[in-house]
Image 1 (cartoon, rainbow, N blue to C red):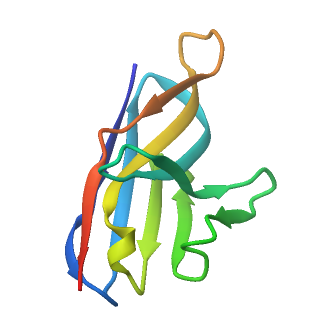
Image 2: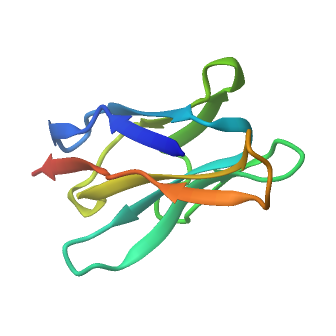
Length: 121
């Protein structure tokens, strides 16, 4: 199976920056997607950043211009650079991956456990 480990969250003042890291490991042969979501205390989950087929990044309107998603394919790792953070960005940030297993079968998906980002005023 595949495990996702997120890191880089923490407490930061408004206007500050954080860089989130999602590292995938396990019985995967290929990753087809690694995306970032966030979930508030109200349990609403939204897609924050993704890389579309063809390599074009896409972002939620609320973070566009402030966040940047990137991938290191050799390391099975995704990053989310978050700049100009706002209190409204406070949430648990989760990595989502779609992958092919070394054992074959269909394409699988997995969620990370999440990393807390708290932005103070």
